[in-house]
View 1 (cartoon, helix red, strand yellow):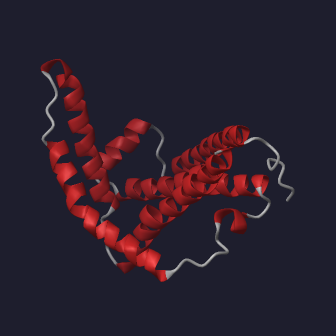
View 2: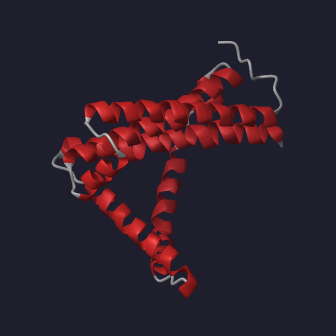
Length: 196
C-alpha cells in the first residue's frame, strides 16, 4: 500500500489520525450495537442497565463483546490503518521488528510492583474526598456511578473456569493494552516526535 500520508506535515498527520480514530470508533460502535441488539436481544439502554443490575449472564457476555469490539475498532484498526497510510509498513512503524532486551521487562515488572502502594494510597485518599454542600448532588452521582462501576466490574470478572480467565485476560488486559500502545505510543507518539 502506498503511504499517502507520508509527505503530510505532522500536524496534518495528527488530524488524519484523529479522523481515522473517529471513523473507526463510530463504525465499530454501530457494529457492536447491531450485534448486541440481535445476538443478545437487547433493545434499549434501560433494558441493558436493568439486566446488568440484575446480574444477567447475557448482559455480561454482551459487555465483553462490546469491550472487545470497542478496543479493536477504536485503537487497533485505526492505528494499523494509519501506520499503513503514513509509512506503508506497520511492523517497522510500530517497532515490531525490533527485539527488546529482557531487562526492560524485568524493570517494568518491578516498577509496577513498587508503584502499587502509591496507587493504593491514592485510591484511599480518593475515597475520603468530600465535596462542599452545594455539590452534594454531584457527589451522590459520583458515588452511585462508582457503585455501579464496582458491580459491573464484579460481574465482568466472574469466572466459572480457566477458559473464562483466559477470555477475560484477552478481552480486559491484552487487547486494550495492545490497542492503546499501538495508537498512543505507536501512531500518536511517532507523529509528535516527528513534529519536534
